[in-house]
Length: 264
Image 1 (cartoon, one colour):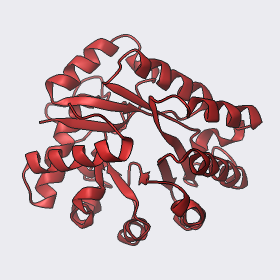
Image 2 (cartoon, one colour):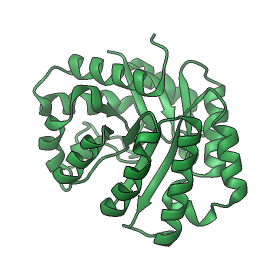
Image 3 (cartoon, rainbow, N blue to C red):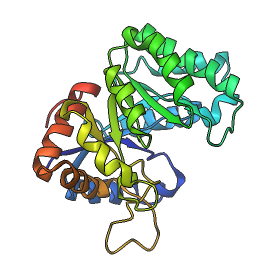
């Protein structure tokens, strides 16, 4: 099984002490390529630096998460544009809107989201997107730019059937995480995942967050790792009524096409 984790926060401090072991465990489970998420100016620089040390294995995104939108300035915009020129950076993001926590004011989030949409349009790059409790505003802004970017993935999709259909109507890709394994809040995804066309579905861990609650035995440290992508793939396959090998092959081919990854 050859898997691509399209969203792993490997720059998180919890991975500083055992990165090589984390990647080895991932490879042992068939997770051979990973896209390291950039979620702030510094985080995007770190994602690129980390990916540079593992050529052909790690790739990166460059963007500012809505939680950090308040810190976005002209220098940040210029730096993201500079980072986007590196061939290891394969998408703009993580960017979008988050009205669940509102760590940044909503008007600031909207302005910063649009600036990053403009970077993707100017560079002709895919978008790695975040949306939580902000569907209407998110969709309205994305619609204005969708035909100006080659592709867009709504990362860590957790929303409703209507939201899913809106994104698919915009020809967006959908990223599914271990949220689908959460019996408290992710059960609706087990139905919705059947509606995602094979060439629009990608899988991710969002490590170190969102450890799948169905992993047995659960790790004592509770840290999610890319190695658990195989478990997520198996859960999605069961819900889609297909073999894990089919889900893996299709999601990997989709990720390769979306991010322009070389096949192994």
